[in-house]
Image (cartoon, rainbow, N blue to C red; front, side):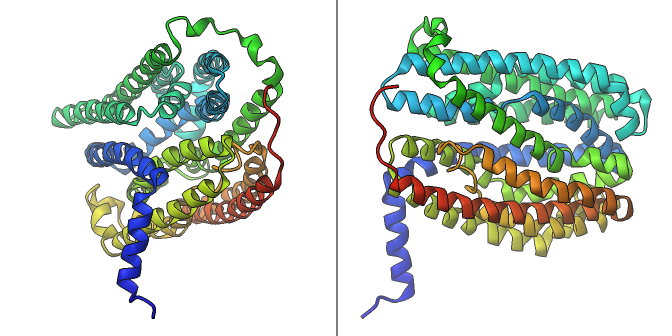
Length: 457
C-alpha cells in the first residue's frame, strides 16, 4: 500500500537535504542568497530613492550610462570566472596544483588587459554613446567617469571564480553586502540633500570600484594560501599542451557573452537608441522588480556550476544528474510562488518607485515574468556543456535567437517601447532555455558512454 502524498513528499525532501552534494550547494547558495537578499533589499531601496529623486527619464539615463560601460567591459571580457572554475578544478582534481596556478595567472593577465582595453573604448566612444543612446551629447563626461568602474574591476571575474572554487562563498557574500551598503548610503545622502544625476552615477561608481578591488585582492590572498607565496611564478609553458582548449573555451565564452550583451545586457541602450530615455526608465523599473524572482536563483547558478564542474572532472555522472534534478526542484519551489506574488502585488511594488511608472512598468513586468520563470527553473541549461568541452554550443543557440531578437527590436521597439522589449526578452529566454536543456541532457548521455581517458597530459 502506497504512503499518502505528504509523507512521501517529506521522505523525498529528507533524502534530498541529506545528500552531501545538495548540502554543499544549499550551504554555499545560502551565503550568497543571504548576501543577495540583503543587497536586493538595499538595491530596491537605492532604486526607489534614485527614481524619486530623478524621475522616469532620469532613472532611464542612469541605466543608459551604467550599461554603456558595463557593455564595453563585456565586449572585451572572456568570462574568466568560468574558465578558472573549469580548468583550475580539472587540474586540482588531477593533482596538478602548479598547472592550476598557471591557469589563474593566465586568466588574471588576460582579464587585466581586457579591462584596460574596455576603458579605452569607453573614453573613445563616450560622446557618441551619449548622443545615440541618451540623445544628450553633453552627458559624455558622465559616461567617461563611470567608465572608471571597468578599469577598477582589475581581474574580479577571475578572482571570483577562484574564490568560488575554494569555497569562499561567505567572503564573496560579505563583499557584496559591503558594496551595497556603500552605494545605498551615498544615494541616500544625495536624496537628502536634493542631489542630481551626477551624484547617483558617482554612488554607483563607488560601489562598483569597491567590489572589484576587494574581490581582486581577496583572490590574490587565496592563491597565496592555496599554492604558496610563489604561485605567481608558475610557468605558463606548463599549459602548452592545453592552450588550444583554453583559447577555445575563452573565445567561445566571449562570443557567447557578446551575444548575451547584444540580446540581454544592452536592452536599455537599444531602447534609448530606438525609443527614448523615458521608455528606458519604465523598462529599468520592470527589470528591477523582476529581479525579485531571480534573486535566489542567481547564486544557485554559481554554486551549482562549481559542483557540476567538479563532478564532471571526476566523471561522477549520477551525481551530475542528481544536481540537475534537485536544482530544478529547488528553483521551481521559489520561482512559481514568487511569480504569483508579483502578479498579485506587483502594481503596488512598482508604485513604490513613483506613480508615474504606472501602468507601463507593471505591464512590462507581467510580460517579463513568463521568460524569467522559464529561465529560472531551468537555470542549469548550459552549466553541463561548459565543463564537458562544449562551450561553443550555447553560443550557436544564442546567436540564432539573437538574430530574431535584434530584428524584433528594430521592428517592435519604436512602436511598443518598453513593452516590446519585454516581450522580446521573454521569448528569447524561453527559446534558449529549452534548446540548451535538450542539448545538455543529450551531451550528458553521450559523456557517460565515453571511455575513461588515460592518466597524464
